[in-house]
Image 1 (tube, helix red, strand yellow):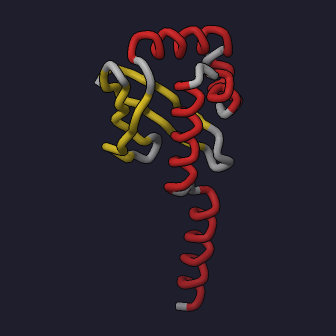
Image 2 (cartoon, rainbow, N blue to C red; image 1 turned 90 degrees about the horizontal axis):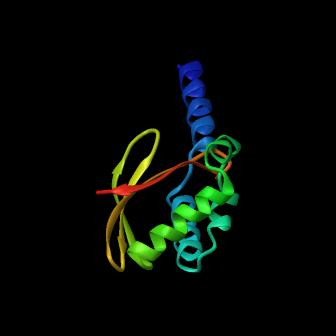
Length: 119
């Protein structure tokens, strides 16, 4: 029984080390919101993990974010609508519309999934 209890404690401890908290997501979303509204897409890109940086190059990413800002206006709020193992889905309110943001953070707090699309 002691072995089972100890094993479960170790497993739980390891899982909690690598899990991101609500505050981690909130802080990342606030960074995204601030950077988006101030036209500083590079701040968002710097938060990407290496794999995502390889897929989303800085210049095209900035152009996409700037275009989105021009079309939808400022980002005003976000609300978690679905949490899955690999990502969280947020309903994001903009000045001129509502979009869906898919976001996932790695164990070290980097963004590994970042998608904004029509809802």
